[in-house]
Length: 497
Image (cartoon, rainbow, N blue to C red; front, side, top):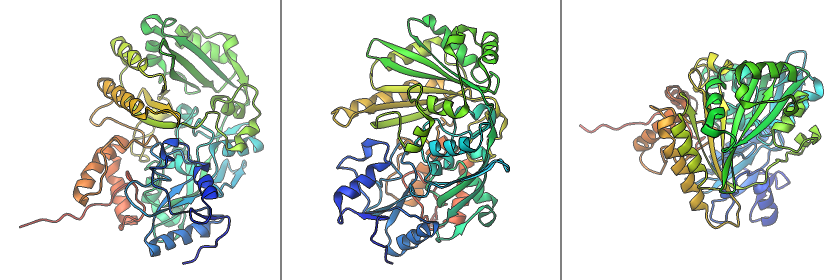
């Protein structure tokens, strides 16, 4: 089949500089842009839904493996790099970014290539009292975000982004355009939290808008190790973070200050004014010592800009620029879920580990509220009742730095150290924080590969993995949509007599 050689189609042979610019445009992890990393043979940027259908049909006929990218935030670069198959092509959905908000229906259709920031801004254009419970990083592409669940500051009140999906448009392995009615409830269940790149190409989501007050309050209170003697504040946070009123979200962000101390920043959004917030904090978390001066009232859309990390006073239209508040780095990340408070002895060791690397960050995200009320099997995302908080571990380094192995060793050592304090049997992980260390995948026979997939499948999805495999085997039996940690089909086992 022929592709039009225009601005929607790029090959390294035609123009290397333009090709590289397109490849790097939304790739968020510089670790996967080095010369040694595999590159697609060509990049296709569809301008219409039918272009995606054509690309899938062509991929099958040409037998060229494909990867699909909406925002490029996959922590292992799987949306634009293939370690297991060459040649491969990249479908970049960044041109499919239309947003249609229907305030009267409390819903919106948003195309997969739109960023969360663009979507939030378009909602706020129409209403000051509507929002959507999705991610905190404004440059994340909404197409892939919802396929893994999608959480943010509104999760304790309204659940995940995937919990608030009403319909979807996607292209299946046959190149057919389908919506909820045509795909059936099993596939609709699977794509809302079952991970991206396994079932089809998501073109758009129809989501349910949620109510937000005209005035919300944000605060960030930072403490050093010395200011939190005995970890009294952090220990109390562990006891109350998942039990606070649903309108209050307080996460804890850990950073090293050189190699001298660790700071813990308590970063919060409250759906209400500062007077109401102060009453809640005095009753439930006075140890933090929050004052009215710490609290800043603003609109919900302004809180999106603030919590995304932009400087105070940044205009909200920065969300349309698809520009991050953080510089791009090479990254490695991992995740955990905590069901019992970590004792002080564990915290001391954790802080000692943090002091060993000055390029790390750790974020604790509180659960409870609506997250504990939704069944583990409602969608594939299973991390619900009993979870106090989620941990994200992250280490980053600049391209010029010559010690990436040191940083990766640190995060693996930290992950190993934390094992006694986190969930077990299985040790749970968040699929949107993709981690190829889990059940390492290699090219081998189908049975062994499937056994490895059962390991990371349990980490990400617990018992929901089995249902995901059945759905995959039904809708994509030839495993057309595949990557290093895609949902596998049931293996065809041979038995010797």
